[in-house]
Image 1 (cartoon, rainbow, N blue to C red):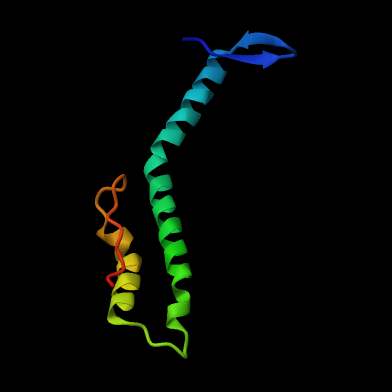
Image 2 (tube, rainbow, N blue to C red):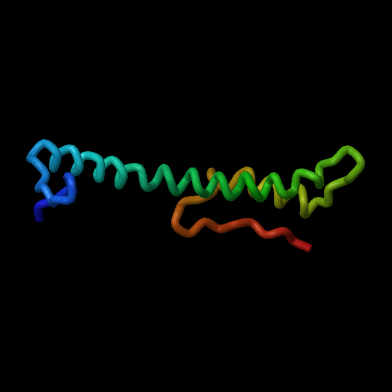
Length: 93
């Protein structure tokens, strides 16, 4: 199906070169989907670690459960096989 872009209010069909360039852009975006998913997982994991950084204050002692939880968060990318369904660690109480 041909593509069009708007030039001064008129729809103008892509040239062959524009079609080829757009196809390459779309392929590059699709090829990067997995990388974006991993980056999203790491960003969410980093936020969870940041939210628990106060546990490691010099005037506090982390419980074994807290230590394990933070380690499982750090290990999450290496232990995830299905990026679409990661198994997030839970803090045991």
